[in-house]
Amino acid sequence: MSEETVAKTPEGYIGWLEHTLAGIAGSVERAVFTEEHARKPGWLQRVDPRAKLVMFVATVLAASLSVSLVILAALYLLVLAAAWASRLPFEFFVKRVWLGIPFFAGIVIVPSIFLSPGPKLVELPLLHIGPTITGLLGALVFVARVGVCVSLAVLLVMTTPWADVLKSLQALRVPEVFILILSMTYRYIFLFLHALNSMFEARKSRLVGRSTGSEDRRWIIRSMATLMSKSFKMSNDVYAAMLARGFTGRIHTYSTYRMRSADWLSLSGTLAIAAAVIVVERVIR
Image (cartoon, rainbow, N blue to C red; front, side):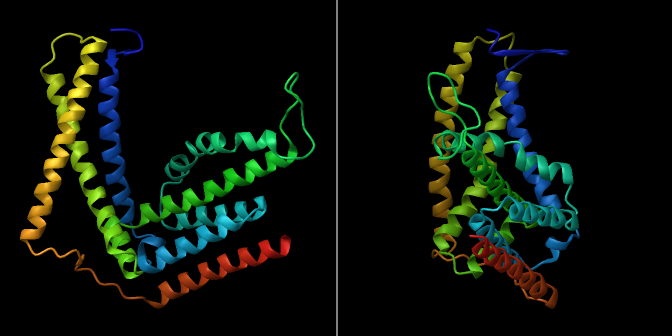
């Protein structure tokens, strides 16, 4: 097996299959960990999910319309305060957002740094181009805006069980087909993750010695085909079972919500902040 296929550790050689297996297990554990946060007695956990969803949409809209770094920084501080009031682990919350945003957002915004009009900080020889002050400021605003919006999305998911999110979408008149697709995807993606995890463990338990890279690739291809075949068969079986139990295309849930005075206060405060941000942005422009 080549050096790209295995990695050296103090315990010995660990192949990329083991790393993949660890990644799958980690994904499931993070999902369960998030549900544990949603059950904590924090501020946002006590807010009605419908009000919470409206608060999220209003704040994301305000952040998306903002072009001021000061306002975006203030919004992010409010998000951090909400995370602290909701008893979320600060380090986990910040890392979950900012580990990937600078990389992916940077790839999107890098060309505008060089193509935006304005005075250049430096000029690359021969190419006669360079980063401009306008481009750098625009890139900072874009990254900050994405960071605030993603932080809000993570905050919503970490403080709200997925079933409540779907129920809130239904209460806000989101098309039921869209909600049904989200619900089924969320449920069965974990089921297939467990199936893939079992396939990895079954292979490793029957493997004697080290496999070559070509053998691993062939096994991966066969596993992908097997998993796809299982998914098609399971989708047909699940749909047939739903029809046999009287499914008509409408989602029925047992949970009921009631808006309290604290929920109305949280919703009103968030809407006021979002409106203030939009008004200030209009004044600045």
